Length: 200
Image 1 (cartoon, rainbow, N blue to C red):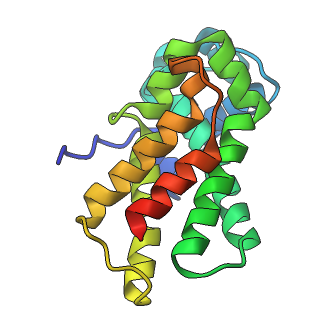
Image 2: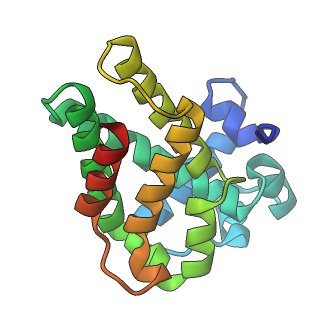
């Protein structure tokens, strides 16, 4: 297992640490607005908007990739909470339902599609790199959901939960962004069927 990277000032602020004046959270909010408007996040322009130097902005957020990762993950968290509330089934079927809904909604998100269409290499790096926040946190959330099933007696995993969570996330990545990897259409249902097989 790799060590967890040192959190950026933005990551610490998102976790609840307080800071006076213009802060990394302001940079995050401005970047998120731009992302949702399907505008390119230019670090020089963002720094100027906030009235800070570009060096300060980079110190706060780590890099443009890390900032975009935080923005994308914040939207993913909202979608995941929505999907968990909407799926009525329990047990493995409930997990698979949430998984399929999440993949479908994420892959069809207009802002996400715009990023992938305009900067596919950067987008795939942000979404699927083990060093990035998106994959790391999605694996953590997936592992937590699997642990809930184990604790409820609804799942007897055949793999270590860390490994299983990693595999499920990678399956989702493969079928969500396949049009930018192989040219095939995204298929959340096929990914969900594979996950159902792995869990049952």
